Image 1 (tube, rainbow, N blue to C red):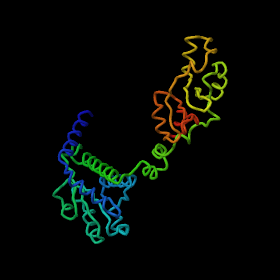
Image 2: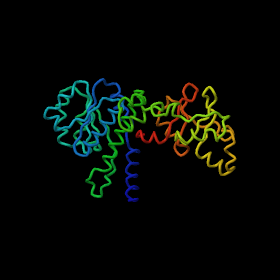
Image 3: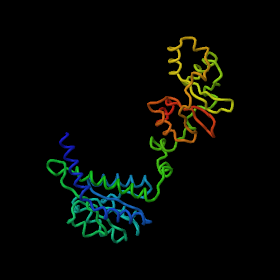
Image 4: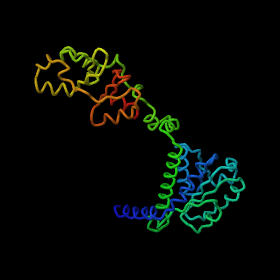
Length: 313
């Protein structure tokens, strides 16, 4: 397989080195300035890629749909209106089903762009704009199965979608509104305050208390830590299971008579209540399993890695 990966890299390098960026930018500008809908169509493997590109465009702020060519010829052309754009994906530029569709699309006053790897194909002569995707050869040893050709189609589509996304100033909030469910939606919408334990469930203590005085609360609340605060709930430090084990190993039962302020970890990492829960998870990964949560400068709760994982992040 290593030789195949190496060969595919060579083919992709050929694509990058020979791609006409200006033609891609021209298409991007056209779609940015269009108030119409963007349709993508293709047959076979190119059709699958067209569907994926349409889905990516839609999720990143561009109104886009896949237009099945056969269905279009049997009634679905009704979806297409003047001012819309249609991107036609065809490796050869000779796909009959697509060529048959073109006159009817022209009659509807749409902007046609051919995306092909054959600059001399009939498709090129019948559209308003052409993006040629340079193809050295397919990875398939017989040159038959679409492999490299579909990969460069997908690369082109993904870059086009992100370029439009950036040009429109599409934000993470916009992305969140398009992905309200699933892991993506949770990672860009769920905030720490929605998953944290409130103050009533958070094990708090003063730095002046002795360890033996707080052990019951430390155990009962099952957070694996004590959040150390002053009278105004300002964060002073954190005392964890690990701190307890290290203190017992070093000092034995004498540690029970020591103040938490002498045993705690000062200036611990913390997270704002309004921060994304996903950011809290990244902050905790490999470092800790709990974070003090801060709101308006005061401790307002605690968030646990276990709860973040359980939430599906």
